[in-house]
Length: 165
Image (cartoon, rainbow, N blue to C red; front, side, top):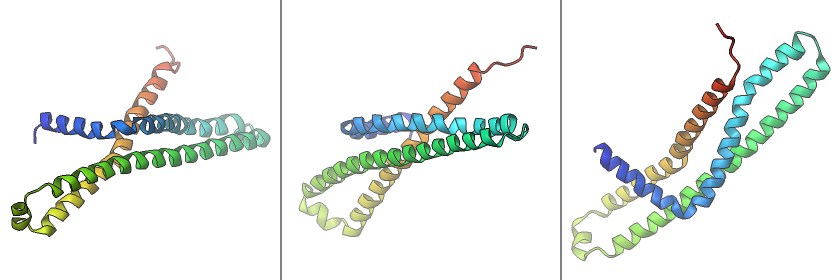
């Protein structure tokens, strides 16, 4: 397959998700918040060491640990709702695809049904739809998450103060 047909297939798959764009936008918000919280986690370690462990300030360390626990809790909730929204949108889009495939199969000539083994048709239908499910749920999250992580790290890197040489 060439890249033009891959792009066409990707566009067609994205069109399938269009009725569920509100769910996907909500998932995107959770993904942005989640990635924002993930990139702050190393800073907690830095602050704990620099501000509280080396000076031996256990009271401040307790407060920082409580805030870090809050960040981890919010991260877990964002991950839960992100997965819930993405799975819901993907499964609804896949239900639409399955219904279209069923309608298409129902409209086939009897000759097609006679000459094509049932197991082959069913295997193709189920394995292809399962592959799409994996793409919709995991692939979409990985692609969007990676892009957002790269953008957030690049933005943070560009805004950090660096010593001049």
